[in-house]
Image 1 (spheres, rainbow, N blue to C red):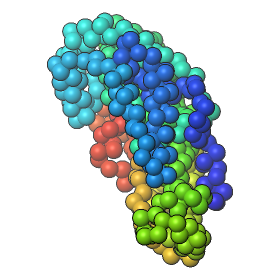
Image 2 (tube, helix red, strand yellow):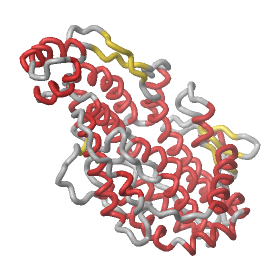
Image 3 (tube, rainbow, N blue to C red):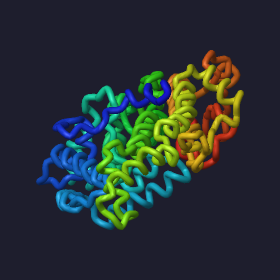
Length: 410
């Protein structure tokens, strides 16, 4: 295994059959029924997922306990409320979240916030949960947290603060979201960035109404901009799938169906030792997957000027496929790679939006020429209604720009 692969894997907490408590259990069990133990449900789900995964990898048929756990998960919103959230999401996707959108649904949002005391308490615990020093590895088939429910609670809490015109409360909420944004899987980071972007939009709308209230939002720190832990989780999950059977009896069991003579163990062992590595070499394949990821991790941790120069210097930095190889070095198959560059650039969009908000809070009658004399390399521009900062990546797709969009209304 290469140094790059090992460095990334060291950032991840592998499966521990004796693990009884972990901050991430609260997230996995977030949708527990009101009369169920949220943390216990998360713990049971974690061990159940790994049990099912290991049994499957060993070619064994075990009991899938996930259905048993589903009965402990709650249903918290009526179809009418769900339809409201979906309609809000559709508008926000096209136009960005705004205070006006919340106001149009004020009565229902306030009613739901008042009625969901248990979920509100859980959401506050998530915001204040201690950070672990490693990402907790889940299986590739694990039941992920109910992020749809978490996003709905985000909207209920953010709208509650907005309706009270609680600017200091939203500032504190943003700071909490920033602090959560490190030792988590990649999907968690992207959702937290979206929640941050929402909160900045609402805070800017409130500041436009009451410009005399002064505040500054801390920009994302290098660890918060980094994708080290998020990408390390992706590598570890890939490694868990690339299982190399070391137990000869287990491997023999998996090829039993090839042989008419079930007792031909010597043939099975000969087949194992002679051919299995010719078909697939786990570490070589993992290294080919991890090599470009390590480059993206380094890119994500650069200062803004250096980051911008690096990403514009090599516009073809994205590697679309990774070869999985056999022992002789021959490529078996090309495996599609995620759009790593998109995930690296996304935190920069949100950080730029924070920078824009801090500028507008100080003075909405800004001098664009003076703004563009900054040391960080931000390129400001304005439209008829917004102040923006250009994407550091000229190849940013429109759909990615619309998702976080480094622009705020003047």
